[in-house]
Length: 252
Image (cartoon, rainbow, N blue to C red; front, side, top):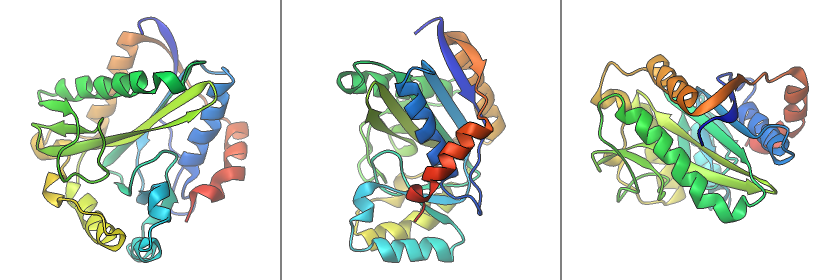
């Protein structure tokens, strides 16, 4: 993918009063990517206090109780753009959404999964850590393309959404405060009756306390500049207005 064009944004828009807006923005941008207004987009931004539920969670008998718990903890309950189970976003997580225009998007899904997971694996290993791709037994929101440290601790989740002529690979990286992830997910997964092992949960800062959100963003920026011709993505008022029309569908 050398010398390809990419549009990059580190802006975030969700807040306590605007839950789900970042998800709606990514959906708007994915539609524009499918029309080839943008060939490739990468959004990477700081999370806010949200629990993002997957479609199968919403059909679960324990979903209402899980959402009630989330709101009692002053988190927002939102619906994921991708598949997967409930995950915790907070200011110690980096959230990303990578969008590619591709006429053969559906048949090349695993190619993009592999590309994005290896990109972030490389970024994390640049800190001197031992990051691997693959599911750990007992991890939350398990997935073939999860990222882990030393085959023991999950530190990133990656999922996908396919539309006509475009693929979205989205997820998060736990940078710090892994205890908050566990504090939120233990009762939520209990309500959803999903078995997991909280001891498989961690963050980059647990392994290297010099890592913070800023240093991780800096590494990501360096890496995309090595591989792409980078343009700043301006998320203008038109994109925001279109996104707010659909925001409600991503809020519980």
